[in-house]
Length: 112
Image 1: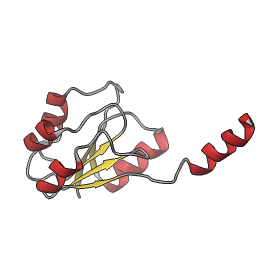
Image 2 (image 1 turned 135 degrees about the vertical axis):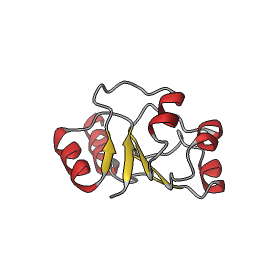
Image 3 (image 1 turned 60 degrees about the horizontal axis):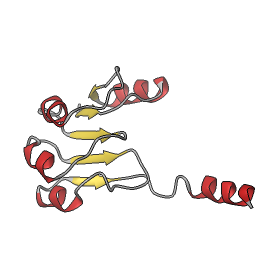
């Protein structure tokens, strides 16, 4: 079973699903993890589910263990992740594009 770090607290249903699929380290306290926390908590992980608030710059990415193969960004963008540094290490970076497109359009029409 793959091991992952989840950097922030999720809904209980999501936590349950993640624990069914992965050996996961969850952030139940929902605090923004320091760079040192991210590095140490992910040392034996295959991937990191980054949920807001954490910056993955070159310095952090260079200190991640060689086992980390993916940073899954739980956000529309990925400006908090240095994609070039991740790519150089062979780490895949993903995000969730398009999930807010309809909601943004609806709010725009509402404001008009």
